[in-house]
Image 1 (tube, one colour):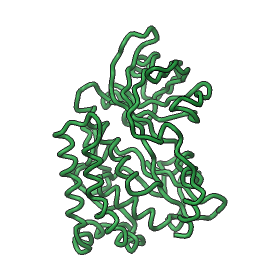
Image 2 (cartoon, rainbow, N blue to C red):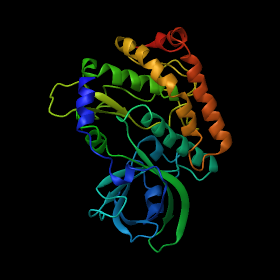
Image 3 (cartoon, rainbow, N blue to C red):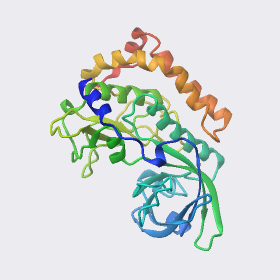
Length: 336
């Protein structure tokens, strides 16, 4: 609590891009088809431009990113990394940005717009629980080739840079290598992280370890109070396309976890954090109306898909309706 108070007292404002939820209208011009057709193992940087409706184009570099969504049998259109070749002007919503992740539509079928919008909703749901979270900004993107000929128009969303998440909270991104001990985790933040992942039905994460040879952590980034070398770390989750809330057709549960599909919830929080998890249950219950309102406010989301997502969240709230049901349905499968 003391560290949280200190962090809030020195927190900074969000960058302009993430200071509002109003969807952007953009045009991204460049060799988008060539990027989409590239091999999954390649990372070609291609020149392009990005223009907010009514503004002059900004020179950018585009590159595919990700792992699963770069596989051709999964997605026809990969997620992108957008790098600004020069600082955007102060009047631009992109002022202060250098490199951004852009989550894209994966495939052209209408259902894939809904999958993307549900993943965007997952970010908004975690925002409602804590400022220690990635902000996201929705955009309607018109993709064109170099000559300005239309390719496709789809929703996409930008994800806040982890350094900006940390700065906003008076903290710093902690680069931890492949792994760090669980004792370094801030118990309350780690418990909130794990309950949230149970809520959205996501099993594709690791709190304090990354894939072999890669930086920590899998679909999570640790941040820490500034100037404290051995401070406890707060995990910030991202990448929710394998969650039950989204239910993307390519999503499968991790092989080592005994569930039959991604919509089947299983709690993977640490048993050492169960006291903190129990204390957080009232906080989650109190957020139930706000969570429903968030799902009901996502632009472009099919009403039927939104209703299914709301029903899925209602299953979580039934699981935690009382402390006894939370013990029986959720905390019983804690780890360690």
